[in-house]
Image 1 (tube, rainbow, N blue to C red):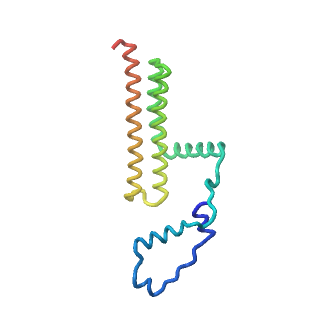
Image 2 (image 1 turned 90 degrees about the vertical axis):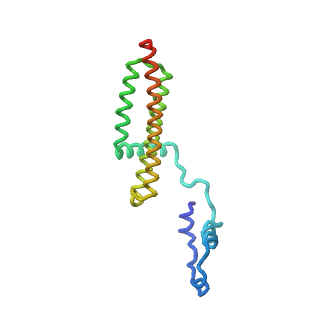
Amino acid sequence: MSARRLRRHNPRPPRTADAEDNLHPPTLDAELEARLAEFADSGEWTPRAGRRNLRDKGAAGVRGLKLALRGDSSFFAHAYRGLLIALTALLLGIGPHQWCLLLIAGGLVLVSELGHSAVDTLARAYGDPDAPGPTAAREIATAGVLVSVIVFIIVAAVVLVSRMSALYGW
């Protein structure tokens, strides 16, 4: 059971205020001890509650991919640019190893864009997305996309230029 479920079924008794509490406010150590006491032995914990089988995980992944593709236009921009690079690679006749490099680099961009989309969705769902905390998280996720795009550009340039140099004898 999760901690939330355990607290719901085993609520703590309400604390009564006495005169001594009003004289001395709780210290940081007392507050920490009180919070740690909430997680004390309060019942049986299961290692994994609500495990999903492979079919359920796959269905959740497809739904998440559908939500990400519909919710963020940058996927289409990445797909358009990737298609242009793939057509160029096809016209140049690159080998299977080079195709693998391009696919891995393109997959890295898509995975980082999915992570960015998830962080952005969470930031918008939990309050003001322009607050300092969510803004920092969104900018970090954007930096991840930027790094993956730079890696993709480098890999594509190396693969395509090396093939063009082999074809044209540079």
